[in-house]
Amino acid sequence: MKLIIAIVQDEDSGRVVSGLMSEGYSVTKLATTGGFLRAGNTTLLIGVDEEKFDGAMAVIEKICKSRKQIATSPSPIAGSSGVYMPYPVEVMVGGATIFVMNVEQFKKV
Ligand code: 2BA
Image (cartoon, rainbow, N blue to C red; front, side, top):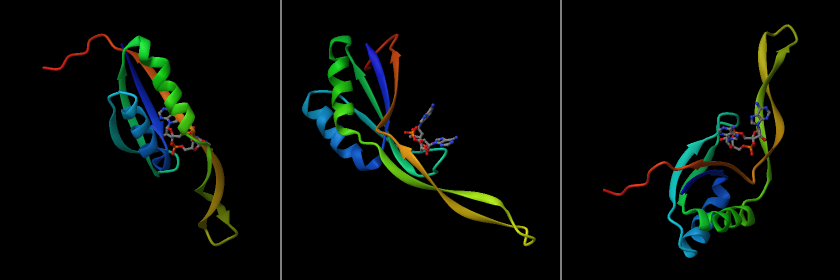
């Protein structure tokens, strides 16, 4: 068995969960926050048997899209004012960031 940990954008999360559930996968959805953008994203935990692994990955890859987002970073000190001015930086986020782990044990008690 494998555990897929997939960090997806909030905009895609509903469709990914529906897509996985409709194909018989069990999914746990966590509300998470990215460290860089400090914006909400969604982390999905999906435990799958080896033979169903490729199917789950295909659902995630089909639905999750890359998008541009604006991050605000502090600029160097502006002139003699000593004030840090925020300025926008464009970053490409997603489709999905995926970690795959081998599961040593899976129990429901
Ligand atoms: P965030 O940390 O909010 O990052 C959002 C996007 O900002 C990233 O998209 C990447 O394009 C950019 N970014 C992140 N750190 C950066 C940096 N130090 N300098 C410049 N740009 C940077 P993704 O790579 O698609 O990541 C989307 C989200 O997936 C991340 O949100 C984070 O929540 C998670 N993630 C990505 N890589 C991870 C990792 N190695 N470990 C844990 N979580 C990760």
